[in-house]
Length: 153
Length: 153
Image (cartoon, rainbow over all chains, first blue to last red; front, side):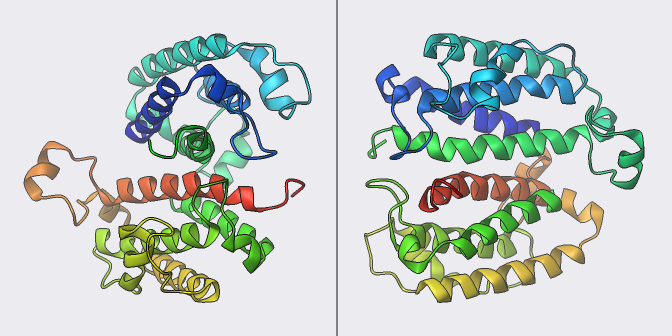
């Protein structure tokens, strides 16, 4: 699972390295989310993983307002593309360090947003499941961000 | 992992239930893959999971020509939308039945496309890893197929 998480984050970073700021400001398809919105959205969702893994305080909780709580174009962007890219680098480095220090059995303990009662009934709601879901969420939006690149890439 | 696979397949089926054939014939974004291509592509990739899991012969290997081996618009489509939808239903039902009969430890055995030598060095190349990768592949294209739906959905 960590390997898949790293793989898709690497694909995201490779794509971000290819896109200009102008491309990232554009909509991924007519009337759809812009690149900057999806970039901030993915950074905020990755940052929120700290909460679910009981991995300490979030680094950039202030991202949520413009990139999770509100849809694209509803509120002014609170961060620029360089700020979002820097946040993503910091989030992923910190998360990687935390994950590297986790014991294998820790993955099968409950994540922070499920009660002990609910976890007893649904033991799959563990930390591993969070990473699997977050990786799929990343893949989902990566498929959309890919539309910002030139079709020949 | 099965839960995530089922979740994203359910999301795909829900989306397919909402889209008209006309919407599925359209491009997901200007100049990008059409809905019918991605539908056939996802069906073919899911069908190929049988190979990797040593789950018996594939059901629809003939999908590969138009939906994996060649890009969209390069060759004539060999299947209609109703045929692709029916194939997907059959593939998923057969795969679900196979997975339900697998023993937990079987997930950690090597998948069919890795040699015993390579697997000894890289033990994560197991059947579980195949399902994780295929689920992320599905999520990636589901994010693109979602662009065929009305923005208000």
